[in-house]
Length: 93
Image (tube, helix red, strand yellow):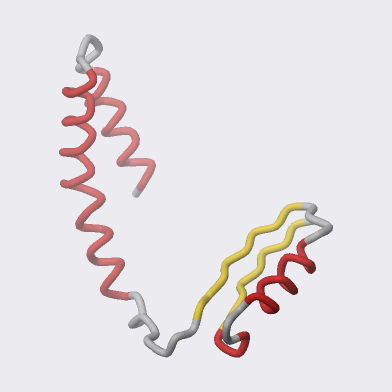
């Protein structure tokens, strides 16, 4: 889907080689509105309802970070209510 979008965008912009920035933006915006917005609206309908319980989800991506455990420890120590803090961690070493 996204590869198709990028190919179309490439073709559209190739036809406007001498375009000024406003025309480039307009071309991009029109294509996004036509192709990506409908996809996004449909995708959001499949998402679960947002929680309304005061919880916080902390998403952490870590690459060779020796201090990652310290970061998580600090997050829980500084949380007003640590029981409401949920962490999603992707750690690559």
